Length: 495
Ligand code: GLN
Image (cartoon, rainbow, N blue to C red; front, side, top):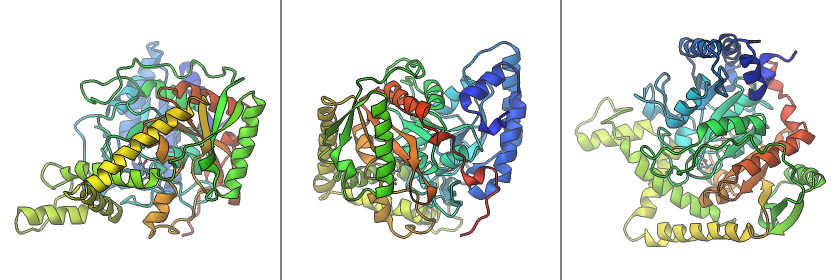
């Protein structure tokens, strides 16, 4: 029999429903693992009493004959979602010890579906970064090699799932933060269409880009979670789509015979590492064997997505983060001479370097005299990037390519080089700027035996199709079942 932590969400939910295992027993098992694997830096907050109380409530619901889809399944949330029962920090000192008076809509919806919360997961400060090294608390470590980054910003989520410290987790993706850590840690993650999931209670980074999504080992598990997470929230998030909740598991297993998969030329240029390219090519060959047809397409403005994103996201961040002024919530400097000095000291102490960098860039591109040259120009190109996708979708049904140009790098290797980090976002940014759904599915291993993810991008609201393509791939491959070194061994920390 497989140990509890090796079961998928679907398997675990079935066992719980059949009362072969209790929610309390399951929660205890994962809490113990989270503790013994603390050196991976996945969790920022754990509270056994809260988790076990939720598990007992789930057991009572099971005993009462309820059949919510995730009843008793433990999951953990990226610390960008606010929660009443756990602290919510966004990986920042600015919010150290902060307690929200309410739960984020996504947290609430998953709880209604029966999920039990194991705790809050590490992330880059305010979700800014791609390695989780920008967490103000500690870096997270890749379970395939603890000397390497797990990706980011949802790095804690990817580590928790890959190391079997949670069967599934939530993440958020503004420019790749679900897809890239999923790729680096060998798990599956999907960022839905912008507006699918409510942003209410998601600590804001760049509001026109931020989206919540699930991270799990299989596409089927992602489909289960995503079905529970999405749905309109008109009173609380005006950008949430007025579309009834959908069952994303319904088309899993459908044939993909004749499906046209677009291969963007620009995703396979000189910047793509040969080991990543090889894994991608092998996965594409598998999809072809399943009956898909590969068609070459072009996304001509792929490179421009970097400057465009790194203008728009900081611009929105500079506005969103102005709320951390030491007055209403979060950190306040201990000593100051007057109000302005209080603001300055509070923000100087509370924010880390990357966040300050983004606030400065964002303020600059929005300032009088530069707005037209930077922000407005970036908005125009953003529209063109979205149009390029619509052009591409006249020739294909889904788009496939790499998630990132390389496998996971070493901790510290790029910590002082923000631009190197920004450039590595090249393949995830286009779908974010267009608001399209994007998924990362394990598709092989590259240099140093590190996982590689295949990115699938769909047209608006095509999540079910993306999940099905990933599911079909997982039916004929076993990359998602391979076990990282840190799962059984308690990792020794080298660097
Ligand atoms: N790496 C990108 C950034 O630093 C994306 C982060 C994200 O999606 N939250 O902004």
